[in-house]
Picture: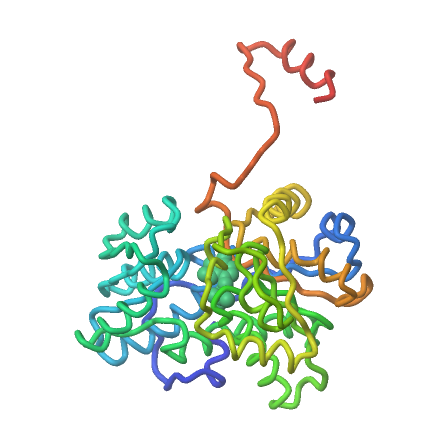
Length: 351
Ligand SMILES: Cc1ncc(COP(=O)(O)O)c(C=O)c1O
């Protein structure tokens, strides 16, 4: 990621942050193109970041700045992946992480935070209160604040994904970029990156952005469409996009509109199906929020927002290895006793 430092708020000097960030693959998977029907589909595979999500770009830049400024403690509120990214990143950089998570945080993510010695506070009232507490603590105790929307370096770090997409597409940008939306920072950062490419004079047209929310938690889609949410109490299995009051919400709506894009919503069932397809046809293991952009392709096509022959980049933002309970395999395990006869029989059975 540091290759882009002339476009990042970072002075010269050696990089101290030890984890390798960025340069994730842009996959042109024939299987996924066939299954999805999009002939020019690319997946930006952010699951290959050091802690398995695109949050590592933001964490890397915030901690690099923090190390240079002499901070010892860093804090963030998170529905899961920021917390994992910050816990591991801080541990590797020799900093102390203080994390505020909502009660619905996934067990697998919590375990990683505790494994690396982060101080974790589980906040009963949920993410909004966790966010407020983390920000207050940063101010009160003089900690480095890595909160989305509070520290502008988070967007700066995440915008580098746009530069990579441009480079990997042979110095072009796609017609459409599809992104999962929780707080909306990932989307706005991508948009900022594309706009900076235009400001640098290396592209002319900007992509349209499709923001994907969960059917059970779609505040921005509803605001954009001027309709009331179709639920009384929000819920989704996709913790990364389970955000009722997105911190960067209004900016994300503005960015989507500026791009001539739109929001779509996907059901939890569609997320689970997308996880299965991404793995079986594309070789990418995603978590529910990470699979949301791919799941959003169908409703976006049905709504006439994307044509099948357009160049589309869908971001896969988080790995499913931290959330194995959502890997719903239907396959069978054959138990055998050391003889190839049973292998032969099972293979012939066609299962
Ligand atoms: C895997 C994953 N995808 C997407 C998002 C949504 O990103 P943002 O909150 O920047 O909209 C998150 C946020 O936690 C996430 O963990």
